Length: 195
Image (cartoon, rainbow, N blue to C red):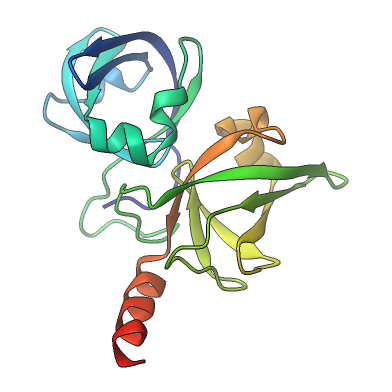
C-alpha cells in the first residue's frame, strides 16, 4: 500500500525487452536505501526491485502491467514519480493507494492559474467513478478531484507538487496512470450487484 506522497523523481536510464517482460533501469538518490524484492510505486505502478547498484536499480514489468498502464510508452530520460510502501503506524498524508493502475487517462487541459495549475483528465467509461472532493491517484500522486464529470475530472496542483513530481512535464495529449479511490470501487461493485 502507498499514500500518494511522492518521495523522489527517478530517471529512466535503460529499457530492455525480455520475452514479454520489460526490464527498466532507473537512477535515483533513494536507490541505496532500496532492497531487492521491495515494492516501489513508479508513476503509480507497484513494481518489485530486482537489482541495485549504487544509484541505479532495476524493476521488471510483466505483459499485464504493460497493457494496463503507460509503462509501454516510457522512454530513456523520462522522469518517474517514486514512493516506497507505507509503514504501519506512519501518518497517512495522502490516501490509500494499492499501486494497481485501473486505466490510462489523457490530459486534455493544462492551465496555469496565477501560481497554481489546473489539469483536466479524460478517462474511459468503465466502472470507475470520481467524486467531487474525493481522492484520485494520477501517476501515483494522491490528489483531490474537482469538476467531476462522467468521463473526466480536474485536479488543482500547488507549486510544491508541480515542482517535486513529474506534473511539471505533463502537457495536453499526454497519457497518465489512474488509480481510482478504492472505497469508490467497492461501493460501485456492491451497487452493481443490487440493481
